[in-house]
Image (cartoon, rainbow, N blue to C red; front, side):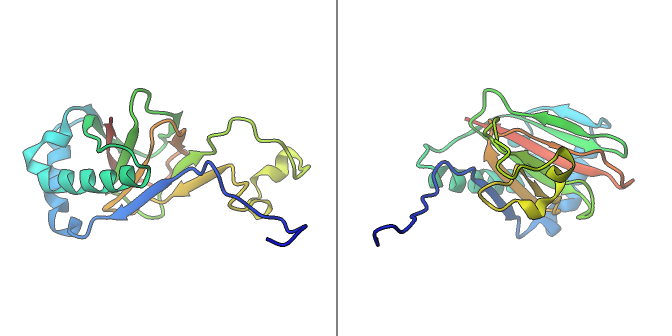
Length: 188
């Protein structure tokens, strides 16, 4: 290190994992059929134990435990799960998954142009170092990877987003008519 040189250390990152299931196209019909068999838009159940979607569940759990290994955590097991079929003019307010360590959100049926899953910065106090007005706060050009207040994941069909359960996340108001189906699991 040279005297007077600024050294940047990146501490306390928010780590979000993303993977696309390599065999999802082969099983999508069965997964959608399983979810639609409930004839409801939101069902809490032990879907992670369901034999009809075992191959998918095993793959999701494998990816979740790859994520936990990066944190030096012990392997985790799912303990609750649900699916949601989001329709036009619905949204999901920001929330956390209290009581869980890790959560996963799998995109069962979706349109890439549909609403993303949005994650908030975990620090609830962000000083306005930009000296910007509230109108300017929506301009992403003012931010970089040190200062972004949110990040978004588009609904990639067959993709899974893996995150620490305490990170606030939600979805904006859905505008597209096509359904957006997600399968969510919590782990500890």
